[in-house]
Length: 634
Image 1: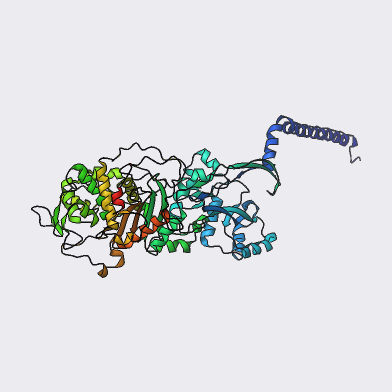
Image 2: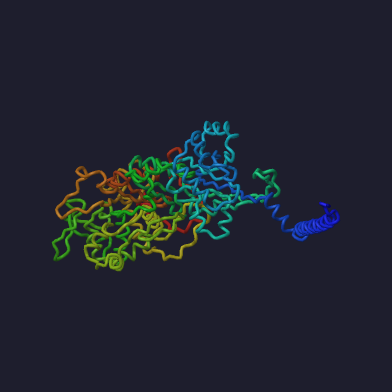
């Protein structure tokens, strides 16, 4: 009996062999076709994809422009900083790595939170994500020793912003800190591309206003990397365009004098060169350390600033709004003369109060016993409220408003700094629109001495004083020396020269006269100063109440104010000083203004030497002889 059919098995094997060969051949044909498709037909596409894995384009941040004062002193520069960063694609366990790093360096919760936010935000693959900046040498050494156990951890050396004068210029320079998604969302696509390699963005002051100029243009480079993202070589590079340096009108000598003169008191000082509108000093005290904000301020430091009752983060010079008080009396006097409701010869009797006919309410003068017979000159020199009550009532709020706004009061000055407050120059229309109430005669009387609804910033007071020094010719204050100021299209207030001359003479007697309210300010001066003191009420007194500073808490006392310019016959500086709760403008604010003027006008030998303007050809034509030689020698 035959158990195997060898012939049949041979046929089956032959058939299987043939089919196997066919299948193998078909698979080889498919493989060959695939190779032809990839290597020939799709060659260009896949060589591009390969290069993308091997070649990366990286943004190169431009060096930020530097900031100088008018003397060439460096106010903001860039210094190297060592920071800790992670390349997320190389870190096997990010939480565990962060916990390990926290044992080597100080990591606060805010640092960890910022890291996770940056990690989740749009970014390029293999791009380092910052964890903490400003590493110490000891912290760098700890990480370096354990580097082999920390894949993806790196220490980068990057330039960061540094402010060598700390608080001194904090409110005018502002600061930079980390750019965030909100900043990027406000940008156009081109702007976003320009910030692709940048970590920092201007927040306040000059840094914010001139951000585009200081930032520069981003550069790019193509680099070849290995599979782990390590750079092997640079294939091509377009260098970044550094940001432009910015030179300011600010003078460090004048700025330091204003800061020191304020001492530990809260307040603001603005000094302007009326010849070209350059801001010589811009002080708001107390200030803050802008260096703390650059890489991210700690919760402890920010809480200290936030909870400080002196409000060091508040820019009093730019955003503070205070009643201007008697500092506006020279301008109000010119408004009365311009309208014909008073003149230099007109006199009134001041018994120490003013009462409207048919009314019981009494508006008191600051001197209870009054000033006796008063004309315009005496009213300015001795700051007689009653004279201006009477004149303001006859002038009316409408003419007062229209005249004073031409000095830059009640509106933004146009200074090249962000965040300026508008102030309030009240009118009938303003009160009805804002408060829904009619205008009363008492409102006009209060406004005539710079009280009531009227609010101005120290910057506006300085600008109005500079406009006065220019005999009504408008100006726009500038912090940076970028371009000469454009010719103003606003109407000039220059009228009869004799009125400007006589009002300047009255302001000179405020400082140098026997009965002036700022006599202490002028003692020993090498030049003549024209000024006007003022006080701004913090709260209103009742009908029968009397103001007694000694019985009040310090923060309820009047604010001290003074405005002035010098030399009186050829002004080269206009100053406004506010001392919060300082009381008398003559005794508190006057010495501050004098120190600022001396710092600008006197040379090292203590002799008068008026500095030139910062921008050649930018000096506007001033009216000759702003005060007569006679007034200069009074």
